[in-house]
Image (cartoon, rainbow, N blue to C red; front, side, top):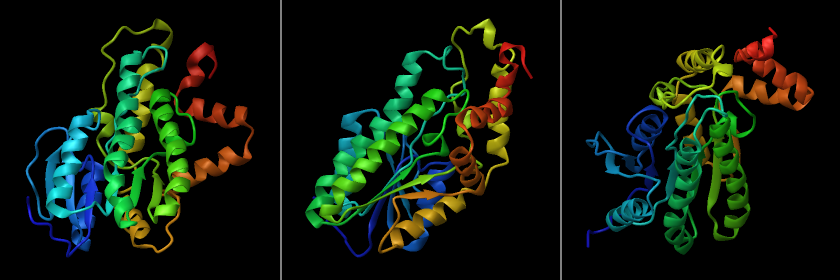
Length: 278
């Protein structure tokens, strides 16, 4: 048995080899946390972050990863569920196997990690679960309907957790970023399945709009700063909207009629071309 050193608090950040996860993991390490980051494939450790292999779609992988951390560092004090998967493709064209994979990563993967970490958190009556959701968890986005569905599921799950875990002293927070500068869209699965002629006028435009918004998005360090704010707060909020675009979008969604709001969204993503209107 490896000797447990509880001098500093322990944090686990999934999807920590790049993008938002890497930025959050590095920020936690700089703040003094003992940080474990994960990736689907083996990655080298870096300053302050020990990298472990983890596939959140596989229960045994989750069990082994959390067990190894608890053996070497004790209970996980902060779990940042960040690993995510998206596809930009019209829903009708997207195979349900692809949609299922997104749900496995974005929703069930988070639940597997929570269930693995909770027993030790309950035993010490302390801990903080942090989930990186998305603005897509509160509204529909053309070309990403299944991604939105997975994030909507995550949001409902976290609402329930927030109420359930108060009795154990475990805190729960969820971040809803808009577009940030990461390569998640560049890495997303490009449609290599049969397509429908009806979507030919908009398919490429959908991806271009999302890639442009991501390339011009905010600095991921803003998300890391909000994570730090949440875990350092005595009374953290359940939800944090991180960027101005997301806050504005949700404001307009709350005040505009749904038909008007989504007609604006459709136009932005080029879906007004569908059916011949512009």
